[in-house]
Length: 316
Image 1 (cartoon, helix red, strand yellow):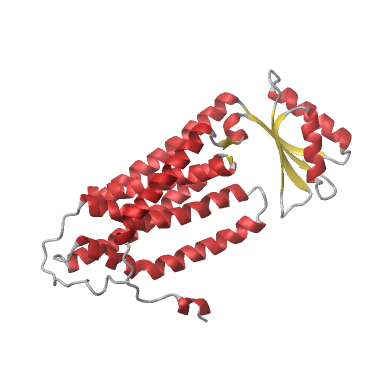
Image 2: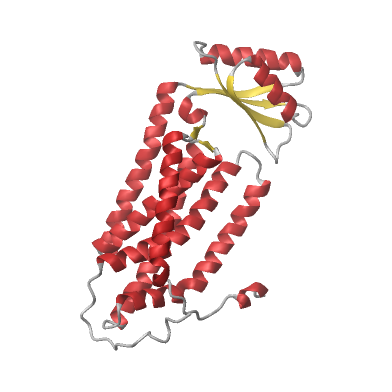
């Protein structure tokens, strides 16, 4: 059975995407400046993975009273205390905190555990983990190195597959995506942990997949219509793949949206990062990667092809 809403997606469109590229460039520049300013002045809300600290997984014989537990942890005197419940397991929760200045993580862990058991006799600590500042710093650098390696491999693949101009446009677009996603996380104050590194790597993969499909269609049309102006071929290529982009993006957002709303606080940062990445990555495929190719130009295939005019087709 077909999804009934698909019939509302137009099969043939003639939008002039290139026409709005200068406006999109100014819009993207403003967003980039805002994101960098937020990262510089406000920074990321680094989680315990990157700041060091203590994480306790607790269990109770009843649903966790998160508000009471959070208030109890705050009174103990630790820093950046967080209590995260699990929607699928209401009797368990994760307590994260930073030890007081000058206090060892192991001592702080024992102290918090003792105080919590006093206030909640049925509370049991099922697991504990301690992350030192040195290890957390290495994790942060390792995470960003992973992002850099992913971008470098991306450039190599696109360069080999399509050419340097395509690869450069793709990398600039993906860097645009990563900076904006980081800026959104900074402004929203969402905790940045190792799971967000994994989400950013997923964002790179999704965004690059969009660029590859876009470039594939563009290169195919360049072979077919070698005398047609490049801006018209870009509009044609993007219009031809627009319905596929809408269906793929909407399906992904529907799946992630349900997880973001009902997955609980533990999954929210991960899913939120991926949702922002899909939205921004789809936008950058149209208004960052393709306009850059228009600016830099591409080498056309020398095979014979029939020239056509898109003067009528490019009208909205």
